[in-house]
Length: 608
Image (cartoon, rainbow, N blue to C red; front, side, top):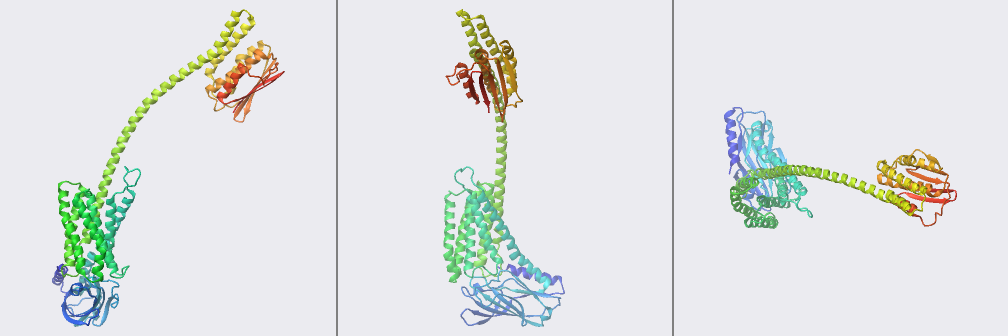
């Protein structure tokens, strides 16, 4: 195929027709002196392009091309030469003057400058009536060395041809490299970060992203080779790397298509994957054989096997995509179909036909796979976003429902708590009435029934009963932690009794801060403890003086009831009243201490 030659001829014709000031010449006739490595030079006339790998397969060497041409018929300010492909290393001379040089002509398997077109300016003073253009090239085995037909003419017209070719082969390649690399990084990042949330004990990642990322990464290296004039490894090692990158791209992209279609368990897809991975596994020895032992037909057959495998698969893949498949499957099927057709074209042009200086189209059609992967990612993101919105809506509805249910449950619990509080309060009052007032009323009844108790004894018992009844009622209104108010209430209730018993009450109570942990129950227990201590003074001590003392003790309170009565044996077994006081103290976490001797009895209660 001579598309480039036809295009050059068409452009030259248009330029000649549109301008009378300049002339563009296409140089196709040359005398060649070819020196194969280890052989004597051979001279002959040739028609350009000169494709070295087709004329001398498996051999390296050098060639000198002499091209004679007449000076342009019309003058121009500046001239230039455009050569679509030459090398692998080259020198360009015009009438004995060096115009351009790339690489070392004597160093085989070194740098490769035959990958992009060349634009060589020509000074007008170098041109003569009859001119000789000398192009020397060094060619390596399997690197598409040689010389394409050159174009000479005014620099502006020639530059148009050069830029078109350069943009198509180099600038476009750079765009493909950048896009492929970005897609590879995104796909690999998705593979690393996106795991299956249903697998709680093991991170399961989607192989589709890994296969797509590796395929694009392989293709980045393969296509980027066009821009690398000084490879990282010597030839043919670097050639083996780039060809293996092609095999890796084909294999991973084939498996990627199978994953997109969801055919991992389908027999035709399984056989397709096995064939692909077998070709990739056998690629390295076959490529080494082809490049090291100069057998390009082996490499052609290897590429052909890939082409046959994909051609057989694309029919089944596309048929299933048209009948019943997801949009993602159809998008990938379209990309695969286009790439198979373009790949077959490139395989024929570069491995079968004798054409030279052609450009591969597969590097550009491969972008369709990157776009397909981007489409799949966007589609999945939209699906996940829609699922997330539905989940959030359902979750919000469930939360609202649960809030209503919790509100109703809370109201019921609050009603039950209030009812329980009323029941507990009634139970406490009944217990206090039974244990306190009821017990003393029973004692008064027994006193009257026995006939042995005096009226004063019965009256004292009834008064004590009345005091305890009043205190039981007062206990319902005690403020939590307010020890001062508790003592003041006891003083108000019992001070008349002390006066009637000729007992002087001494009030030594300073300012008291509320105690945080003393709740209503603790305040009731403390009230009965103090009341019991005061009742013991009234009933048993025969004291003339009673002191109630209270002061702050850090964050707590120290409270004492001191009388000057006859005292008792504090070391003896405690009586019922003192035993009840200690039980109440233990229940609310306070410390009670009793000291007694004739003339002084002190009951100390420490509230921490």
